[in-house]
Image (cartoon, rainbow, N blue to C red; front, side, top):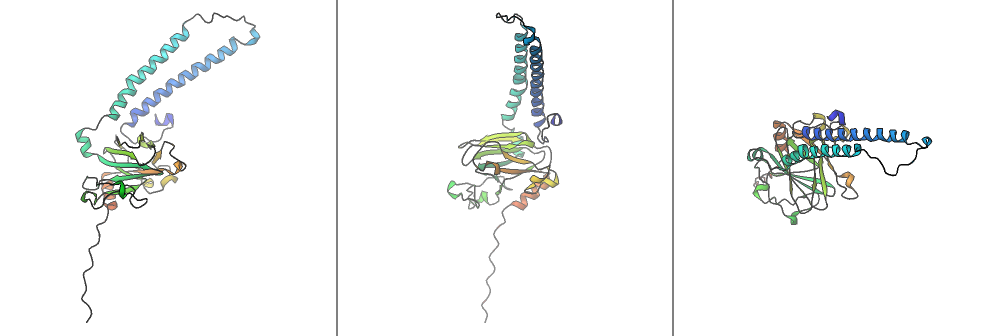
Amino acid sequence: MERFLNLPLNGAAHGGELDFLTGLVHWLMAILFVGWAVYFVVALIRFRGGRQQTARYAGAKGHFSTYGEVGVAVVEIALLIGFAVPMWARRVAALSPEERQRAIEVRVVGEQFAWNIHYPGADGRFGRTDVKLISTGTNPLGIDRNDPAAADDVTTINQLHLEVDRPAYIRLSTKDVIHSFFLPTMRVKQDAIPGMEIPIHFTPTVATPAEATLPGCAATMDCWEIACAQLCGLSHYRMKGFLTVHDAAGYQAWLAGAAPKPPAPPAPATAPAP
């Protein structure tokens, strides 16, 4: 289905089901397009001015158009009730306790014009945040580093790191206007609404190719982009990040390397020279 519709690589567990439904909708639209195109050509030939036909003001007496409309409606209802609604229900359902326990939980906070990403660190607990501590560039999330739970918290800007075959649980919010968090490879798109924290969950099934793991990988074919799919201001075009999916060892190595370094112990006092 990816090749038929020229879709990006599917890297999520739920992506195949979504691509299948997208394919069914496109087949329906293709059949309707061909059918109406054939009818249009037949009508042009049959009712052309050169035949000098007398107008029939009573209109068509058959039921072909009615049958066609009913058929299209039946197919659309089948797609909606049989495929779309059940798939939507599964995607918005909460993770099971077992999945939630092993999931990587991440906060993603949009702002004009960047994605701020907050990891809880090795202890699995997010540190306290305070809007009064927010400062552009140095502390965009307002993390209170005096909180013991925040000591190992990791923050990145426009760089999301996840682990293959491990559920990702993302808490999405925004600091200013509406943004739309879009991961084409993961088949994920969700609006970030001011004043709300919206959960998203999915499971990556494909690790990012090695050549696409460096920041600024937009020049490579395998770069996995984080896009903002909602016009959010004059510099909306700059609101772009990158997703990296590691294997288990690679994710732990990245997390350890990105963790804040403890402050160096003070140098021992030296005795004054005689």
